[in-house]
Each structure stands twice: as C-alpha cells, then as structure tokens.
Image (cartoon, rainbow, N blue to C red):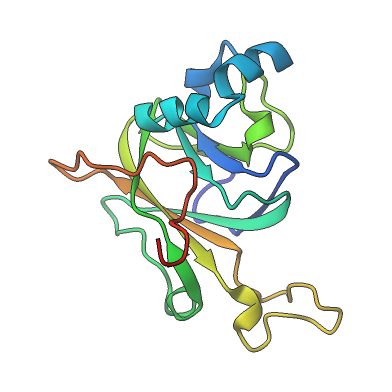
Length: 185
C-alpha cells in the first residue's frame, strides 16, 4: 500500500460504477454467482451502502477515471483545494463508511474476496467515516487538456473523494446508489 498523501489513481469499470469498499465485508464473494447474489441489483448494493461497507462512485458510465482519495484526521481535515473547488461540478451528500482497517477502491465488478491487481488499497484505521464525493470538471480548466484532447499532466482528477472520521452524533448519511442527485432533483 502506498503511503499518504497519494496521487490520483486511474480506476476503471466495465459495469458502470466505481466503489470504495471494506474488503472484510465481502470475504464470501468468491465467484460470479456469489457476486451476483450480493451485488447484482441496485437494492443489493443499497444494503451495503446502508451498512457502510460500500460507497458508490456512480455516474452510470463505463470507463477509466482519475480518482483522488484524500483522508483527513487529527493532523488536518480532508478538504478540496482551491483549484478543485473552482472546477467542482457537483458534490454528494456524506456517505457512511465503516472501516475494518482497510479501504479498497475499484470498479464494482472487482468487489470480492480476491484482491485483483487493479484494486487500489488504502490503510484506514477501524472506525466510522464520512465520505463525500466531488465530480470535477477538469477539462474546463485552462491547461487541463493536452493537444490531443486527453487530460494534461497537470489536469485535475475526475473525482475527489474526501474521507474523514464521522463526527459525534453524525447519524444521517446518503444511501442512494446514484452518487449525485440529478440536476433539478
């Protein structure tokens, strides 16, 4: 596991959703059949979201996305930078994440007992955390796109995920599978 702070990680999905998840909560997911029973429908995913074992990063789109996870703690809060705030499109309400000591990031299809090579692994002390996801319009920033139309070397990530210990009395969390409310919704 790479020590913090970390750069943005490129995470891919062919199932339309990325996820932050607690690996200890999915040790019984050992093949496609058990994955389908535990995660095959939105209501299945919603159960894990309510329990705090999975946080969806879901815009219902396949692809590879740059995701920056910033973890706050006693040394300082997890916050957006000025650049990220200036180019933020939308932010989620806080999701609950209950860590058993680790937090993994991958496409939803990689959630399970086996640590696939593309899973990004974080150490996160056991406890309750508040997770807020920010969608960033990196392509709107001057210099964010190179001459080929791809993200430049200095481009902001697609998503910034802020993780912080849940505050005392913080008991209301988002439980939707869709990370962001629809415009005008």
